[in-house]
Image (cartoon, rainbow, N blue to C red):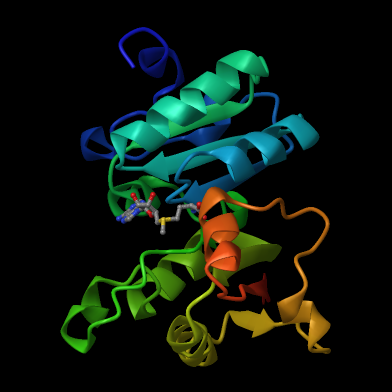
Length: 202
Ligand SMILES: C[S@@+](CC[C@H](N)C(=O)[O-])C[C@H]1O[C@@H](n2cnc3c(N)ncnc32)[C@H](O)[C@@H]1O
């Protein structure tokens, strides 16, 4: 954390707008993962898409530490980390700066009085509509049926996005370019089946 994080840290969004092109001058596209947990999905995407700049946002110190180890082990050069709440980062990035945005197994906050803490919200869909370029994607995974309904309900209120699913398998089968996360493996072990939602930015 002391030596590796400063080299990979995103600028502090509190200090002004962020220009991702300056951070990834060589990248064709920029993708962002909100709440990357142990970082296994983010590291996989970075390794398989070397021309993409990958930003991860995560407030959990152990998760950031795990991603730093993966970055070092795999010598990934296209990863940057925002250590903290993703929301100020989303606010600090410019319009149409992202091609993909991932939210994989967000904290479910199952109690009704805590629903306002859920990452998926009208605010989030508005931010995603501003940040994702037309033709880009928002990917959300969850193993909580109520969170699936919650996400689809909010997506319906977001005219910038279209849910591209046509067949049951489109949301029940993990796409090949979507590696399993630690939390997903845990959910499957405990008998919960994940849902994979892909929304296209119109
Ligand atoms: C259930 S875990 C899933 C982790 C990982 N995506 C996975 O699938 O294994 C939810 C993650 O979201 C992170 N998180 C919670 N609130 C967040 C926020 N406001 N901004 C960014 N990450 C957040 C948590 O620290 C945690 O790592």
